[in-house]
Image 1 (cartoon, rainbow, N blue to C red):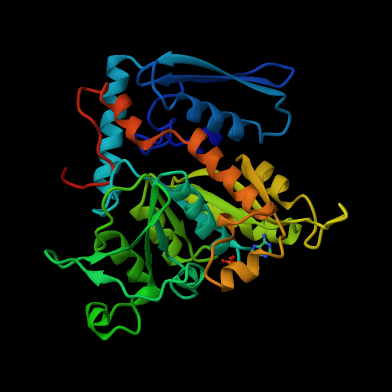
Image 2: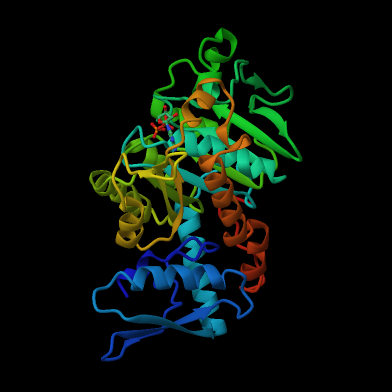
Length: 376
Ligand code: ADP
């Protein structure tokens, strides 16, 4: 039951144990675990996601040989109680942001710098946009921003005409759209910088979420600062429905610091969507693999934190020159590009479309829960 407190009902934003959705869990002598989960409604589209999260968490227990889920539905009293808890939690924690309720937010995090977190963020956002989605890319790595360089963006963010708000830099990418905000697109410009005068850096991200007119978005990819400091915690609190993706390398020494990033997310009730291993073995043209940064770090981290390994991006000599030239490598060919495109497809397939979320809570006491907009 303690482990299941890590499973967040993505719609209600609280853990399923607190919400009263786990009436029981049984373990038979062979280690087979059966968890009973009571849903708000049997047809809830979140079911697959809850199943995956419950399995991933319980499977980390030593001695567990298998995990079954027995589904049931909350009683009307149970639904009212879950609703009350969700409302209370939302009222306590949900801030006003300009991020639409239907946007899937992906926080790309890492334990330390240099593992390719920014490269993955930029190229994942680009891959999603290429697939026809409207994608926001927030460079929250405010001290070490690199997104503008990787996308060859040189202009400045502009103010909106009608409100005292800022517009993201917007680019059409095939059938999709990419909207970018980065500290690197603000500094140097006196006019805009005036608005930011006196701003301490770790408040900057809050402004990016509250004062940027993001408009409609299918996804918001956030390039998090490395590590687990105040800024990261602030973002987690501002975006309680976000999913975290941890980027790590095959090296086991990186695994420990990466696990800390995952813990930070969990402590803030974020869902961990999975792990991406970057800088996996380089495969030379003659077919020989060179594991320059070791092997197995992605799998080991995924197992340790009970989240899926979303994919492995190999070391690819085209990556660095492409980034330096401001051309995301995912638009070209090569093993890294293929791997990132596959991860983007997997995310689109596996993440419950945010737009469907209203379907479940609408069944709760007839009133949809709005998680990110206070007072609405
Ligand atoms: P972080 O955001 O974690 O600090 P970056 O995305 O800036 O890391 O990447 C660090 C360096 O590694 C950059 O020079 C980048 O081009 C390079 N890099 C990242 N991923 C790969 C890869 N799969 N193959 C080759 N080089 C990579």
